[in-house]
Length: 83
Image 1: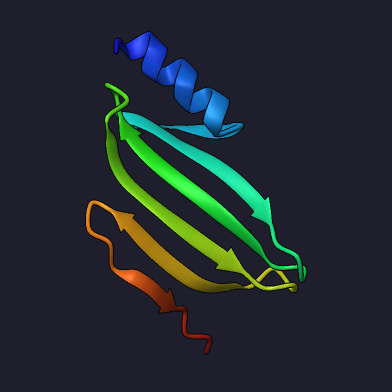
Image 2: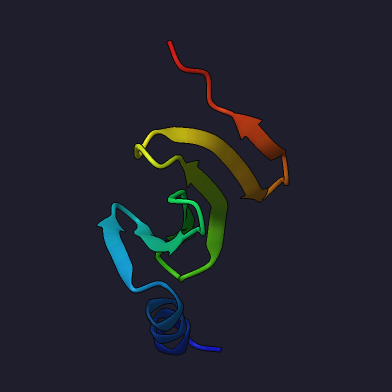
């Protein structure tokens, strides 16, 4: 798959993105049943090759409560400590 096709596919799957030096960060937000939401974040290099993929989980107040790194290494869900 060429660069244009990869980019088009990522833009279709992830409706929001930000340009980064040397790549992009794609974002997809999904609302849960009880007011919580998850944000999926995919970071790619200039060739649209995935370098990092993770999930952020937010509670009903909008506070980040969990982080789940999925790629390059799946670290499982980690609770975010609040001070």
